[in-house]
Length: 130
Image (cartoon, rainbow, N blue to C red):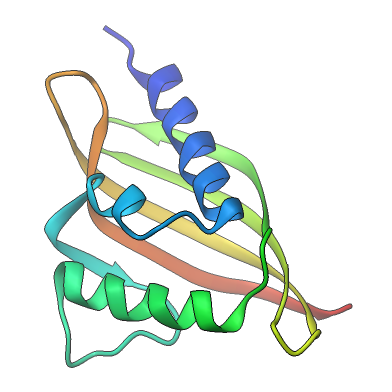
């Protein structure tokens, strides 16, 4: 059975939640408790959900709602997805941010077909002053 459309739908939903800056609980259910969270500006002294919580607390303190994530170049293989994201946001101080990010996910597939993300990596490809 090809679950790739389900994974693509999951990715779209994930970033819709992030655009709204939903509460952290909206994300943790889809992240393995010991997720390898490889993002810019993470607290390397923390791991798993604790690291994600700390990172997201900083996001909520820094960005205004809504943010924008435009996903492209999605490639799904068994247990993995990679894609580019064009990210746009405004900080609480009014600064506009725009960046292109390469995302690489590794995941286990749950019985309902939804991914449980075990590795989440986001690397900055390009940052533009807007």
